[in-house]
Length: 350
Image 1 (cartoon, one colour):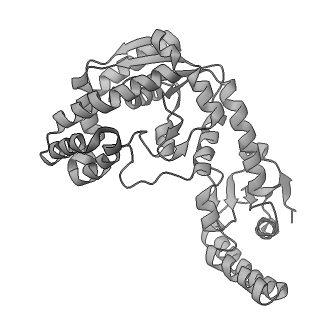
Image 2 (tube, rainbow, N blue to C red):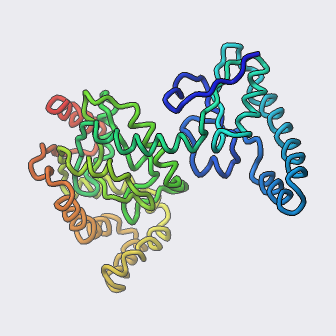
């Protein structure tokens, strides 16, 4: 039998699987990316143990908790880990590296596996993440893709990634397209800390020898905030500007926001958010266009009246290098066009 070994956040990659022993609620709020959730106490059980501790005694709470922990570890071992080979190396963590991870790690080590236990638990991971989020963005060479709404910036990022470029897709990580209509259908945004964990994982994988392409964003993406060091680094970066005529942008946006075309009522509800800016008369006209399914007219109206002026102000304020940035012209919305633009961009800028 091997005793579990205490390891640091820097050693996470040395293990085959990361096991989060916290409750499902704690896991949902944030976790190490790639970890599997195997609670030794679930949310209901934690509440029961806490109530027993307060209303009866610490001894009675420990008895109840031990019964829950034993049963849960046994179930996880039986249902999830019995097929693991002898060479499997799991890492286990809980909130602060205490009893929950110790109990799980002890059982796994008794089997004969080499088991790591994260010293300091999730709290140590979170401290390391905060330090890295200050350091990593400043160490990388950023290239920001700018362009008016609907120009195809996300499509260009996708094509750049397919051609081997380092790409950070903030909107994908945030599950939001970054505008008042940007909520993704059927997908909730992650909590702020989980968004930062996803960012941390991406940033750890980049090399400073090559640029990292990222779309121009504001400080907030939906309800989430881009970490300060990252947004500051983006605002100082060189830019690539993707231009597209309004007709092409209308066409691309109709494809991207097809869920609103399928359900105009959802779009009409979102348009209410623009009433404080433009008044009831203007927004009512936009609602009528939506009900009439006049999508070209409505999309053009929203671009010219709302999105384009707001975007130009934001770019002028935060991305001064955009004025001198290399320009790419989108003449066709097809995949081949974005592949060509990506190749041209990489040939010029790496």
